[in-house]
Length: 56
Image (cartoon, rainbow, N blue to C red; front, side, top):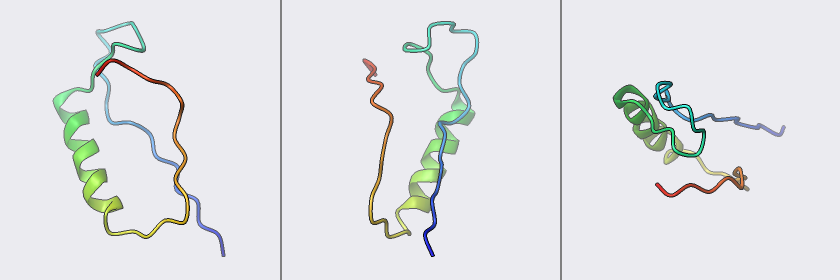
């Protein structure tokens, strides 16, 4: 069976209206760090990512 995980970013700071400059909130950074910890426990055959690049 194939399992596909779809993962979004953590909570964004919606006070910044530029999509490419919008940072994560402290909660969003904590969410992202927790996701890192969870993903390290998995074995993936492939990983795909959005081509969006930012200056962060």
